[in-house]
Amino acid sequence: MRLAVWDPDEPFRRWRDALMQHAKETGLAIDVIDACAEPEAQAEFALVWRPDADWLAGQMGLRAVFNLGAGVDAIAPQLHRLHPGVPLIRLEDAGMGRQMADYVAEGVLHAYRRMPDYAEQQAQQRWEALPLAPRASFTVGFLGLGQMGAAAARRVAAMDFPIHACTRSGQAAAAADLKCPLHALDRLDDFLAQTRVLVVLLPLTADTHGLLDYAVLSRLPQGAHLINASRGAVIDQADLLDLLQSGHIASALLDVFATEPLPAADPLWRHPRVRVTPHVAAQTLVGPSAAQIVRKIAAIERGERPGGVVDMRLGY
Image (tube, rainbow, N blue to C red; front, side, top):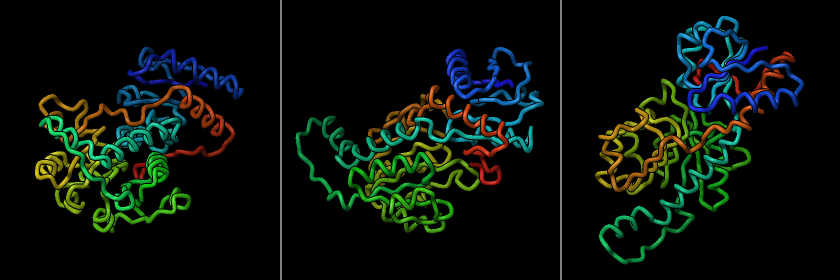
């Protein structure tokens, strides 16, 4: 069988070597091809990151497409239009959960220990110790509790911060072991009103696009903090900037933006209460990802349904 790799950001040989190694260990005969270099070659399986639409349309024998990364909003509509019925399979953690937990934990501690205030004092050459809020009052709210959200929530809970979460249905597989209050999206206002640090880890869908606008974010308590490591278009960036300017939102740690790279003229770059990172909260790791993809192909070959198949109706 042939597995085509379309990933302009990673040297093909790294994917080829890792995939071939795991295929050998699994007993699968896989021919790994570089789709960017051989766009005319046909394959049964494809491993992609933002593939060219013409290339994807020309792949006539696809049995499954694996998306590099946890979010599938860039590929799901395109695949459904070009190849209805071909399953889209996302990576399930593959080392990204630990990275996301690190990123969110740092952001929560940065907010709790009042580092944005100390940065402001440093700019003013002010030497003044600031009081800390009781840890038990510093509730961290997770908007989205999929695999990335659950990994981050476990880390933050282990740091003795109270946590709660909000999901589309008010249910989540991780809720049982986290033992935290869980809200449905139709109770978003109640959830936000109790949140000192809002961690946004939602998929980008028709329902979540622009969800966090001025009216919604205003439901956060005065002086709340925001961490967004999901998709930039979930938040209205102009409204967020207004709330930062007014002080209603005390700080923001932003890894994702509606336009990436973030344009040089965007005021978020220069806002003293904003930290910008270049979509690195949870990066795809070649080794663990290759091992997972080979396991999923082996499951398909056995006639089984692998984990991570995207529900095209929901978009995740």
